[in-house]
Amino acid sequence: MSVEKHTLAAGTPYATAYYVINSGTPGPVFMIISGVHGNEPASSRAAQGIASRFSRGDMRLRQGKLIIVPLVNQTARRKGIRGQPDLNRTFPRGPGSSARHPLSAALWQLVLRYRPSWVLDLHEANGLSQLNPQRVGQSLIMSPASRAGGVAKQIIRRTNLSISNQAYHFNLRHRERAGTFRMACQRLLGARAVTVETCWSLDYSFRIQMQSEIVRQFLRAAGLI
Ligand SMILES: [Zn+2]
Image (cartoon, rainbow, N blue to C red):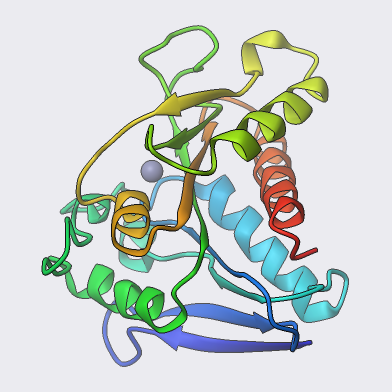
């Protein structure tokens, strides 16, 4: 297994680190990104933690490749804002369409180089999905057409068993939103693409723990760990 650290959008104000973890054995390509929005810290912290565990050799890949971009939007993070424009509306909307921002264009180039069959986009949101059907905090989001539905339902069931407060339970949400990273990966690559959302108002360490555990469960389901 090898772990390489590279720079995305090198030499630009958007430069940010990414990791390529290669098992050396053929298998699925799995991509995890986080920090598309600059005000969702627990998700980036979880993604960085997983990259670090592979770097230290505490986690190992059984097969395939794992690409991790822990903090996509460094400039929004430095300001502590979601991002202006919202980067998650600037990804390609269909065949022949291109990304509408230099950072999403650089990230999309990385996607096209590795062509992942699994994609997780880690976010945080306001409100609890369990208490309000309009809210997506504590949810997994995917297109209704996604092939990841079965796996996501299993992961939600298992995750909720570990959460004693029912209000904090995860739910599956179906959303179609053009220009998002998830929709671009699903529509243009046919990837099993899922957005993971924790809720801002919950304890920071609990959110990091939930994000990390859900990522590990998806990696297991895809046969990578
Ligand atoms: Zn977000």
